[in-house]
Amino acid sequence: MFVYETHGIHAGTGKDHLKHGIDDLEEIVIKAIKRKHPSVTFIVHTPRLTGFRYEAERNTSIKFIRGDAAYFRYGKNISYLKEKYSHKIQIIHGIELEWLGTGLGLNWNKSKIFQADAIDFIIGSIHFSREKIAYDGSVSETEQLISKRENAANLWAEYLEEMMEMVDSSYKTIDVVGHIDLPKLYVGLPDCFRQLNDSDETAAVRMRLLLEKISEYNLSIDVNMAGLVKGCGIYPDINILKRARALNIPVTIGTDCHHLKDFGQNYEIALNYIKEAGYTWYLSYRSGIPIKHPIEEKTNSIERYDFLNLGIELLKRRFSRRIPLKLPSLSFGGKYKELIPDFPGSMASGDSDTIRVRTGEKSVTISDKNWTVKHQVKRTGLFSHHKDQIGVISILFNALASESINVETAFLDYNDDGTATAFLTLSGKENRLGDAVEFAKETWVDSFITLEEREMFPLTRSKIDNPTMLEIDGIEMNIPISSSMIVTCHKNTKGVLLILLSALASVNVNVKNMQLGKRGNKAYAVLGVHGDNKEIESILSRLGTSFHEASFISLTDFTDN
Image (cartoon, helix red, strand yellow):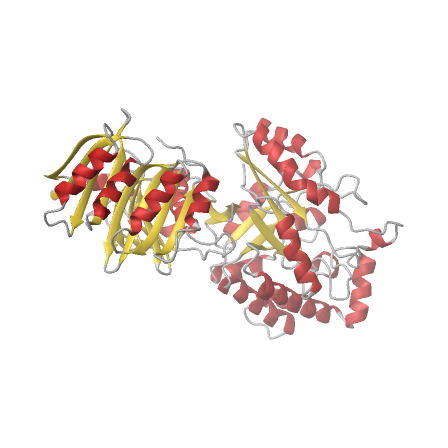
């Protein structure tokens, strides 16, 4: 039994003050590999302001904040392990962002995010009250806090108020809300949570409000097994979890493991627990991308979910890294209709094997095969058979622009023999196409094998078995999915795409595949590219106002055929 954890194994603090977490991360990686786990997830607490200290820390002579040095080493340690074990296991890492209030606390936390190195996710959680007393420290700390707040009911009410403040202030930053009923460790669970849907007590009202905020902000909640180990029950209580399910709040799973003996424990219990609440899947995160996993592995379910996650990743990469992506609307066709029961609200979409993923105005449709090749109609356009070299397609677009010829649609695909073919439909060519063809041939002698106007089927059959993007934002596309892709939405005017192609050629990026489509005054381009990722990202940031969108999509686990 295996679970893709989010709130996973806590990295240790080394010689930083009191012992916390597991120092030897490599030992955990080796154990995970021996158990044939496909993935292992690490997490570390962000350092706290000095005033936020557990009683056990206050009872020492240590002045400074626990964990700073370990936190700064964390990213480098993970990068080392990822590189060393890249062919044996997937290593995920994130941070647990300690809520320390607004003002300085909020700015402090923002700085900690920048100090983290290429993290996959952020969990937002509260361990300390406004009074700087820990909720999960000890019985004596809890008694002290109850005394300050007069009773346990007020403790819970104020805790939930702080949770809502955290979510309101951090929803653009965090992905997951951690152990949302943490105080039950020492104060017990309020009876009103057992009648959460009906109770008018303050804690119940605020828990309902908190869950609604989490839903509206498109965040996940942490199903955390540490509570089971500590004897207070899994976080959150099943009644809270059932209400979260009714609000369509996704869940992540984590052991919140701080000791070697707890590594990999309680996976089956966790899956049964979320299933009891009504869930059929759970999330993990990679580079901020929500990844869905089925609870029950039915025939072909892993394959189906993997392909669904590919579609979600293609869409998410078109948004800012730190904009939480609402779990998108889904449509399934053909064999993928089997997923409809797992995703209430999803729709059927025909007999072809497709998945459509959409959020707002943005959408992507993918298929595991290029079946649309069979349904083409012939078109008249400019056919090019040329060497698959950097800059050749840019030269062709340059020649057409020089004669004021606009490219309406474009299909480019590489061949396995070092050549590529392109088919372009044009407007405004009148009697100038011959001059443009001559200009292109003379600009790069011997690069063009064939360059002529002809009537033909625009799509090649060579990539018929490739996973394929069929649609973007309602515009029909037909381009093989590759590990490095560019998506642009730009003004449908002459010469705009030439800017992109020339810019890519200037930094030695080769365009392997391309398709251009349009609707009204907007045009879309999808390109499969090969080159330096940093150079590509830099170029896309400088294209100018003619481009409404210029997204670089580097797919995490996709292997080009």
